[in-house]
Each structure stands twice: as structure tokens, then as C-alpha cells.
Length: 430
Ligand code: ASP
Ligand code: MG
Image (cartoon, rainbow, N blue to C red; front, side):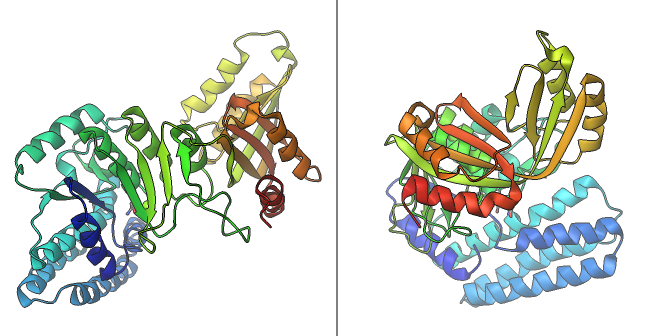
């Protein structure tokens, strides 16, 4: 959501619906980035830079409301909303920094967007109710959403507004186990929407962005791509982790668990089909290829692995200890290779792996994922896949982990080339 037009558009989209709708809003475009920047300045003790960034953001919002609202009464109301939230940011400047405070800063984006949107609805005379996310969206001490209590609290809130059909709430923000304001990580509004859809057993969860769904390849890298019309949850989960990040990866599980169809739609072309994600894959065959950069590959070679049991467990425990997810894994009788994308604890992890054998690390790797219904079972597909990339050195292959995915690890320097060759080889697109 960048321009006031987006807010106008939401109203016209919602008014076409006969069923009640909950609109989950993210912050205005660029806002969360600015808030991250403000937080970083404050953490570093650079109050001047923080103050400048706050003022710049406020200017942006003043212009936004002047454009959004026409009536003096609602404009005054919006000015008061800005005053309240920017005063809060200015007060924070004077307090000593803490992690909890930085989450409070980040929450301002969604608090502002929803309040301003409701003011716009008021101006338009549209009946609605604001459901404060901080009153129902909760995460536990492992940062996992508590779907059970979200369900209960949200339905209680909805009970208070039985006469309404149009609800607005904040994406991204939530309360943590300590009762503090927290969030569902960057891009988390999709996750909020999916959790809410699951909690109310919605007919559909629509994610509106400015791209017409998931594409068969990365449009930033290859010339021609086509939107994928239908994906199963499993296929979408494989893809969400990669490429253009059009969907927050965690947003798949709530929809999948509660069987809520998800639609990825484009605000620029509201009539376009977009991508439908359901239990059912639609068609057999390859749907998309995607890449993920900044992957680190680790190989642990140990003669003691030969015929031993418990070796993998000990290795995995090291990663678990540092809460670092492993993405790909391949094994031989005496070695195991695996990949991670989070380098924060790399040094500690390598040190703890040392006693298990020789450890080698390769930075700057990329995972290429080929996703499709039952692709690894279709010999023709596998032949086509490897046939089209024979000239590229492959470091790891993951095949058979899921019937819907084949993943390759390559050095990142080959990424563009491999995506182009796969576009031609698998989809016949140049
Ligand atoms: N505003 C948050 C972000 O920029 C959440 C979202 O947009 O989904 O990450
Ligand atoms: Mg997003």
C-alpha cells in the first residue's frame, strides 16, 4: 500500500463482496523500512539521525492524508492520529533503547495505516469496525502463533460487532509471551492474514500485492515468465521460501491446516486470475523454478560415520542448539553435506562440528528449486531437467525428499545462467 488510491481500491473490492470481510493491512510502503532505520539510529545512540528520519516520515504521512481525505473533520482526525504516533516516536528518542522498544517502533506502521484507513472509511460513510491485532494476535515464547487463543479472542471481538460486515485489522503486529508488542517478522502481514483466515474458518484468504501471483521463474532474471494458475499448498510451501518472496513462507501452514484456499492477486490488475493455492495441485508437471542466494554449504566428512548410528543426530543437535534451520541435506556413507542461510552462528556451529570430522565450508552458493506436482516421479521431467543444465557444475542434489521438488545447489555465479537454461528447457520460454 503506497498511495491513497490503494485505500480507495480496497473499498471498491470489499463492496463487491456479499460475505463479511476482514481486511488485514500492512504498513504503507516504505514505512517499516524507515522504522527499522529509526530503530537502528536510536540503538546506536545517533539521536540526530533518528530525529531526521522521524521528521521525514511524518512529512510523508502529512502529504498522504492531505491526498487521502477531503473533509475538514476527517482530516483533523487524521492529523490527530499522526500527532499521537509521531509524538510517541519522539518520546522514544529520549528513552534508553531496548529490544522491546524497537518492536514498539516497528508497530507504528500498521497502527497508522489501519487508523488512517478507518478514517477514510468514516469519510466515505462506510460502516466498519477496527479489530486491534494486539488484542487477539499472540505468539508463544518460541515466537509461534497461538492459533487456539487467537481463535477464541478474535471470535469474542467479532461477537461485539454482530451488525458489521467490514472489519479492519493490523497485519504483522502481535503480542509476545511477555505481553509486549512484537511482530511476525518482515513481510508478516501475509502470515497474519492466513492465521486470521484459519481462526475464523474463512471462505478464502486473498493476498493482494502488485504482482499477479507466483510466476514460473524469477522475472528479475529471465525475460519471459508466466503466472502459475494453481498450486497445491505443498508446492507453494516449496516456492514461498525462494525467489521474489511474494508470500511469507510461514503463511502456508495455517491455510493448509485449516483448508482455506489462498489467492494471490494483483491490485494493478484486479481482474487477473493470479495464483490459486489449494489442497489440490490442479495439474501434473513442473510449475516453477526459483532460486535462493546467500546459501552456505557445510560438508562434514568422518570415517566414523561408516556404519555408525547417531552420527546425524549429533550433527543436527549442533544446528538445533543455535536455532539455525538446515535447508538441504545430502549424505554419502562417510560424509554429509548440508546448507544453511542464516550465518549468525556459523562460527560457533563450525567449532562444535570440528570433533566430528573434517569440516569444509562453501559460501556464496545458491539453491535452485524445481517445483511441480509429482515431478520427481516423472522420468521425462527429470531427464529434461538435467538435460538442460548439463554444462553447469552442481554441488548437491536433493531428490525424493518430496515428490514435488528437486533442489540443486550451485555456486551463485551460475544462478542467472541456470535459471535461463531451465526456463528454456522446462517451459520452452526464452
Ligand atoms: N510492514 C511489514 C513489513 O514491511 C509487514 C508486511 O508488510 O507484511 O515487513
Ligand atoms: Mg508483503
